[in-house]
Length: 239
Ligand SMILES: Cc1cc2nc3c(=O)[nH]c(=O)nc-3n(C[C@H](O)[C@H](O)[C@H](O)COP(=O)(O)OP(=O)(O)OC[C@H]3O[C@@H](n4cnc5c(N)ncnc54)[C@H](O)[C@@H]3O)c2cc1C
Image 1: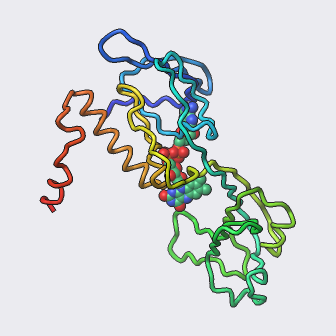
Image 2: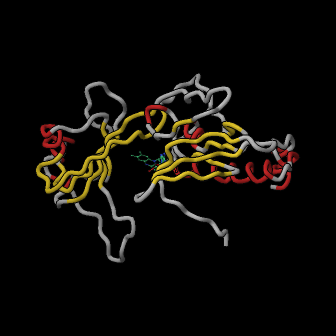
Image 3: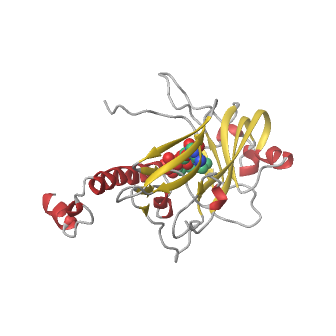
């Protein structure tokens, strides 16, 4: 067993504490019942640190001062609707003839939505059948802005419920931006820089594994295991 202690808390600040060769980190946090502070040898940030995402973490006492990570996150509104899809809007007056589970779009200035997709439960029971377009189903709409009533009535003939969540979904991508550093400071790591290469759960898992290995090797001073020049060659030869 890892003997780990999980603390469910909102981290409000981090500051380096110099007593030995390498800094430790003082983290201040708030739980549901108290505020507290704890000293750590290794810290991994696993949330975007760009200002627009508002992680709420203050970097205090870093020399040089910790600079905000460049770039912005793209805002996407997810609207979950339980209702009847207006298939006429997509060119199918008879919903029974509508053959699609998802409608995806490409960026068009006047278009108020990015996609509409029928949603299935996460755990599909035996005998599960996707709702047909003539039946009331659950749909997920992604859009750049919250949908107003007229837009909802355009996409749905009628609906029972609507839930809206605005996400800072993924970085604004460009062809010339650099990746964020993985090591922000000695033994202080940053996971979400990988989202600049691709924003998906698998990417975060890959970054997490790499950072765990890197932190382990750095902590144990196994420098020969870091940035191994012939690694790609050896992996290919093994295959
Ligand atoms: C609408 C939408 C749809 C998506 N669809 C897919 C998909 O279909 N497939 C896919 O692979 N990926 C999808 N993604 C991307 C996927 O959600 C992300 O790649 C993934 O969640 C990143 O995981 P993460 O753990 O790095 O970060 P996050 O999931 O963002 O987790 C960061 C965590 O840090 C916590 N946190 C933030 N600040 C603090 C603080 N100060 N103190 C303590 N905790 C803090 C947050 O509460 C959060 O729990 C989608 C994303 C969005 C927004």
